[in-house]
Image (cartoon, rainbow, N blue to C red):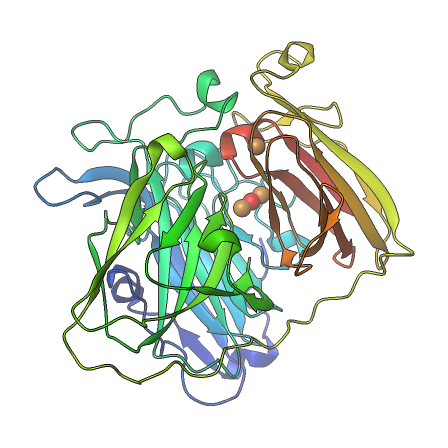
Length: 473
Ligand code: C2O
Ligand code: CU
């Protein structure tokens, strides 16, 4: 437990994120303006309580759903602050089992990383833990438990954390879509069977109901000529999405919170594995009164219409789009690729893999070792010990028949190549999606000391062996 009574230099300027309820429940849009005016950094305080709740996920002719939620809301409240602000979140565990909160993609000090046993004791039922850190990077991030997350996230625990640029690009609306994926029964209750071996040895627990900001969406209302910054967060435990915006040409300006050279996605499809984020600029270039479909076709046989874009009849806001938006860079250390020390990381296992050689109950392995967290967490030896301040290149090899979004805590990394070919944008990510049999080289400076989890974000894969720890010392 950290000492919250110690005065912080920012303690003079404090802001409590009150009325969080209003922010998250505004369907499909979390407006700007939660940050107080003025340029001074602030201490931003919030409270999260993780506990059971009952919410309406599906259309109202169906019953409500018993979930686990932060502050009774699906998704959890939007935590919004500006780069340079400090965040202090008091987390109360109102569940009947231990939990933690992990700030996915945020380069926090190790003690704030929210990994049970490794970085903190798990928060016991009715216990409290205070997280406090200053997020170094502006961007779109999210938070979720790191204990039994294949069940706790699948029951609803996740929320967005938005760090605004000090000088945000000019757009007409800043819109957040937190994508959730649920496996529901006919009565809209959450189906059990978390961590079933069938799921964890295949694609993971892909659900049957996709929500945007906690509701099965119908329409996204826009005005012709509008420029929207669309922040997408894939908060699913297993589902990968491939979004196509018919009639529109979204431009990606950030991935996993980190600015990227603005570009249209390959084939016009925005692909996001679990835990991945993208910031898009979408110019509403069609005519008033028109309608378009946003479709998710990632799993060909499970393609579906996610939401419909509905233009109002109002006249266009502008006749042609403004100049393209480019985000200012975040303060990331540039890896020295030529001098970097190189390591290979091979992911194995899964159905049609070598599962039989693994310890009982395990389905996946990293360099031949299966570390899981099925019933909680335990400490384990690091895969690599890296020297603080040195550059590293990891050659990730997916030697399986399945997709894996591989996430490193505490750092962002550049993706240098895929299957030997240089990437077009050398994007910074914290979670890289590997297709079956794909290889990717990632590079980063190991500049954040501590023991950092390095795992697949299909949370059933993580829990059943696809997890390692990288020590920076
Ligand atoms: Cu999003 Cu190890 O976590
Ligand atoms: Cu995986």
